[in-house]
Image (tube, rainbow, N blue to C red; front, side, top):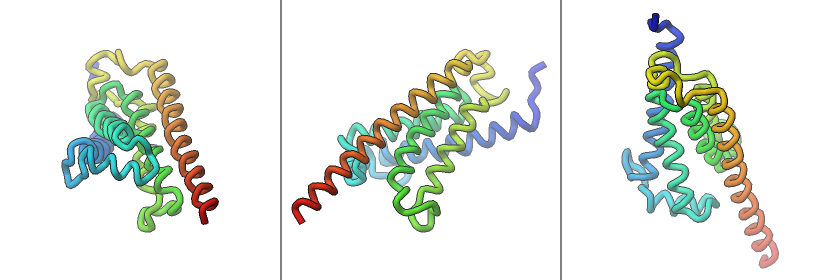
Length: 178
């Protein structure tokens, strides 16, 4: 019997809510929807935040958020979707970390929450009210969880590490010229 229970309904609500927020942020970056800067504006913003080249960073962040968000909402390839959302949010956390934890002060609270929620859904699975369930979990296998999260973690570490290195080099250059 394929009936669903409260857990499945809760996972559906969590997936759709988290996925919609991530997708909205991603479409701001990619298309300028919902008051976003679009690819050109986001690329400039990414450069200003230390993510270079800006256009590639904007595309990666936008696809991680929009693509991961839509896939989370649908419950499709949920491990990969959760890993994509978590990886994109790791980059946002790095930007907001110097301001501390709380969002009211510009801190990393909000992107961290979105990232952890996306990751938790990716690990827990989408539940029975999902495309993963409808497709007999073809894209929701234990090996997919491991590969998706390892790949996302490595990519996020490389991108955030590169940003930190570039910022350190810029600070050293400024100190030398001062």
